[in-house]
Each structure stands twice: as C-alpha cells, then as structure tokens.
Image (tube, rainbow, N blue to C red):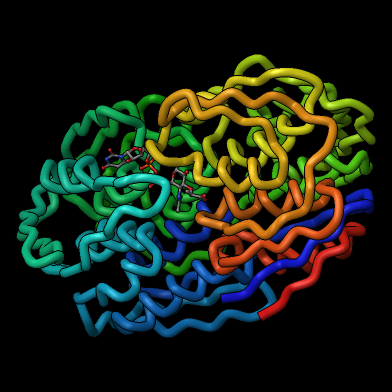
Length: 418
Ligand code: EPZ
C-alpha cells in the first residue's frame, strides 16, 4: 500500500512550478469524448486519477497518448456505451463521464458511484439536471442507465452549486437542441477552464464562473488544443509546507484570482505574500497566528480542499481556531491522526472542531484516509519532532504528482517505502 517516512528539521523552500489542476483535467478529459475528433491537452499532471480516466476513455473506444504532460485523445470511434463499475468504484468523480457520453450517444450505462470517506456524495443533482434535458434515467442493481431520443435545452436551477453536477449538465448540453441555462452553478475556476476547453472545440458556453451559465447547443464540434489551469489546491498545499517550516517559497505559473480565498487565510495567520506577474512568493514566517474561524464554502469562499492543510498549519499556531466544514459531512478524518501527533483538537460536532495551537508536534505512525487529509499529515510530519510514518499514501498520489519528490526538491527529509 506504500508509506512516506518524514523527518522534521528542514525548511521547505525554493522554487515550485507544478502541473495543471486535477479537478480541471478530469472533466476536460471527459469533455474530449464529445468532439469525435482529436483533443490535445497540455499541462496534465501524472497522477493516478488521470490514469483511471485514461482507462475509462480507452474502455469505450478512445485512442489516447500521454507523454510529458500532454494528453492526446482521439474520440472518433466510440465502440462501447458501458462504463465499467470497477472504474467508478476506484474514482467516484468518473461520474462526470456520464454527461459527455449521453451528450454523444443515445444510451449509456455507468456504475453508481458509491460515497467515499469524506461523505455520502449523492448524485441527485446530476440526475435531476440530465432528466431536465430529456434523459430517461433508471437505476438498477447499482447501475445507472441513461436513454435519450433528443436532448433539449432547459433551465436548471441547482439547489446547491455542485461542481460535478454543473460539469455533467454542461457536458450534456453542449450538443442539445436549444439553450440550456444553469442557475446557481458552481463558480470554481475549474468550471471556467472546462467551459474554455469546450468553447475551443466549438461549443457556445457563456457565464462560466458567474451565477448563470448559458449553453447554446451546437451540431458540430472540432479538434481542440488546450492548456489546463494551474492547480490552486496543490500550490496552496506546498505553501502551507513552507509556512509551517519557516521557508521561503516562490511559485511560478499561478493565477492569483484563483488563489485569493487561500491568500486571505495565509495573510490572516501572519504569512507575508508577494505577488509578481504570474508568480507568488511566500516569505519566511516566524510565528503562525491563529485565525478565530476557518469556514469552507463554495467558490469564491475558502475551499474545502484546503481545510485539512490549513488545520495542520493552525495546529502549531499561537491560539485557538474554529474550523467549520460546510461542504462535506465527514471531512475531519485527519483530526484523530493529527491528535496522535500531539495536536490539540476538539471535535465539537460533525462539521465543527476547535484547534488550539501547540508549541510542538511529535512524530508518530498515522494513516491517510483521503487525498487532502493525507497531505495534511505529511505537512505535520515536516515539523513533528522525530519521524512520522504516513501509510495508505495511494490516497495522496491520486492528486499530487510526485509528491515526495517535489517536497524533497524543496528540502524535505521524506522518503517513500512500498
Ligand atoms: C468536486 O467534487 C471536487 N472533485 C472535490 O475535490 C471538491 O472538494 C468538491 O468539488 C467541492 O469543491 C473534483 O472536481 C474531481 P460537489 P464534487 O458536487 O463534484 C453534495 C479533492 O480533494 N452533492 O460540489 O463531488 C455533496 O454530497 C476533491 O480534490 C449533493 O448533495 O463536489 C457534497 O456535500 C474532494 N448532490 C457537496 O454537494 C449532488 O448531486 C459538494 O459536492 C452533488 C453533490
């Protein structure tokens, strides 16, 4: 299963230039099913979730090449309409293939994505949106069957600005007859990146990143070339590593507007940040100040995907910080592991915990339960006295390319053991 062995004592500092956003790449790969043509996608991180998406597209007939961060997808011939449940079980976000597949075929079948550790993660908003577009959906024995005669544009109001539901509705609407409006869509940067990719292949999408997305159905799509946006969450994660260890970090190829919600948190807790063109510099931090409240919200609020990393930072701050996780119902699995390392954290209810900063953390054997929670344990290990062993690192490798290599290149004492 693999583990990291991390020893404290080093500053994490230097220059970082990392590949594109996982949560942008995945829906964009799904979108490459639509154009029955070639899609050239640059800045694609070499992470296990990308390899699962490649397998899914190959399983339905796409021809794919992936070299040096560039993915070339040929979706001319789709030979199957059945997404193997094994893939959906491995990566629940593969459900975003559904919108693209039914946007192109009259029938598709996909395994029902179970929940995952951070929450039940239902897909009711996805299915409701597709039904509004004219898709007949039946669920039986753990499978979802989608049938359509004609996709007709519709106005869809999302009760919650779900990222995945917004993406599935966008993908299914690209070639629908008429205009689709999504009211209260997700506004994350990854939604805008998907819209830009689809527009480059000939779609007509406007309003991505706002409270109203409009998709005018088109008949024909063409070859596309696109470069994926930087990974705001991976960048934020490495910035926490430097802030915790008093290092100076320069990150290239950053889109500052995407980072704003995270920059705000760094500034509030005493980190000094400089912005130059498309670079950000985090200066050495002497003392981490507590924050009073860190509340996760849909974009442009503070991202839930940075919650556990900032919790590791607050665990060595000079005071008390309340964490309120409003997006997922079970995203505190890292708490008990941080406590094993000496963190002073009290879980008040399933969405709230109180972190009291301590002088020192101590190395221990801890278990990664999910992608971002696992990363937060590595961050804690960088400052915990002695040695920390983090197991089940496959969670972490889903979303961070060469995680231990990047940290080592920035000075960390970390090694991977199988
Ligand atoms: C995406 O997940 C991201 N994953 C997540 O990143 C991210 O945490 C999340 O958006 C929120 O920003 C990818 O993009 C691959 P949601 P998604 O639909 O689409 C509820 C990471 O660490 N909901 O916005 O699944 C749901 O239960 C991952 O990189 C419904 O109730 O997120 C959750 O509580 C983790 N019904 C909330 O909405 C639905 O039909 C947010 O889910 C859909 C969602």
